[in-house]
Amino acid sequence: MTSLEVYKSRLSKGLLDFFEKYEASLKELINKLESDNLLLKNFSDAQVTRLMKIEDSCNGPFKLANDLNGIFNLDRNKMKERLAHAKRAFDTDNDVRVAQHLYAVLPIAYHTTLEKLRIYLLFFIDWAKFNIKIENIKGVGEALNPLKLKYPDNKYLKYFDPKTRNAFGHYTFFWEPGGKLKLCKHLFDDNPDEIELAKLMMELSNLSSLINGFYLAYKDKFNLPELDPAMIER
Image (cartoon, rainbow, N blue to C red):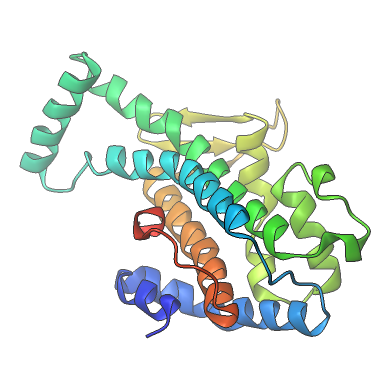
């Protein structure tokens, strides 16, 4: 089995169904980049080690968000038990305070997950052929936009909508009671978009699967070194 096939075998059915909607376009993107001679393929051990260390840093907030979200289980008894452990860990008697920790880490997890995509794109693409210096690519949008211009019909690239990341990046968002997140286009947006906590967690998992999939498809095609499984465990 390829690394991507192993990864897919570990996904839930819902997440697997989502990923497979984009898998063909993900591979198509890599193939087109290769045919246009825009990919880098030879890396030193030091470069690969650096990539792995940076990726591990990016995954920390995502793992924390998953752990905190796991407290709020649909099974009421399990939720009470996990919540009691969390309150002891955070030295608080306030249930809301624990939920606020989850709310606080989610934007960071979303941002760092997207940053992992930016790092992959910086690492694998020959940006000199776009006349772009990698040190000038400060955000994931600056890495995605040239690719969207070159491959405007690619379904994989189209998935990365800037709406949520802009609201998180500029901190123009806020939470309402009941775990509803309001995403503002600007500070005094009169009609912010709304997303529920469960849907946001699903979006974060979807996002992570597409980004992990990009690395693994690239790795399988060009025989790159294996990553530590803990780096893409969830």
